Amino acid sequence: MTKRLFDIAFATLALLLLCPLLLAVALWVRLDSPGPVFFRQQRVGQGGRPFGIYKFRTMRTDAEALGPQITVGRDARITRAGAWLRRAKVDELPQFLNVLRGDMSVVGPRPEVPRYVAQYPADVRATVLSIRPGITDLASIEFRDESALLARSADPERTYVEQILPAKLRHAQQYVRTRSLWLDLRIIALTVRAVLGPHAARHPDSTDNP
Image (cartoon, rainbow, N blue to C red; front, side):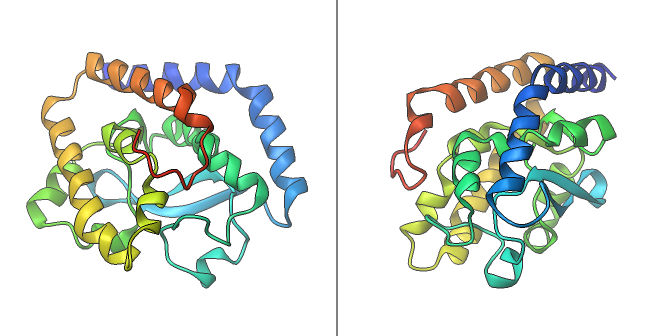
């Protein structure tokens, strides 16, 4: 109950404070390329229930038909506005709406698409999906430059499934075992530092880890 109250209070305050930025970004996305302002994609939430995650649209409207569900380096499907939104993580801000809807928490394991969740080992799946997924977690910080890492791979899909996804799941399981309000506050602080720190202005193809 305490976590849910914190999520509602934090998401409400964030949306109020960020309202001018959100409106400006919405206008930019609309003017930059044809298509809707928001992108909604099915992810797997608590208990294995699917839900639609909100993001500012950063790709062409036909992106899912043109390539994989992961982005690699300078993905040609990404729009001009989308490149900056992804680098600054501003595209994730609409997920505060998912928090208010009860689909997500501010902090928790990042939700995956069904095709990758289907590859979770049964015991890992039960643990990771036992709580609401989050907007941020330690894996999000560690793999902040995930697309750059995948760009260096000869087989990005295989690298994601065999290397990155297992590391993310280890973080997720550790979070489920040790979660607390204090841990959430620490992860939020680390996320803000990662987003606003010196590396935040680097090009998304930077090979440095956060």
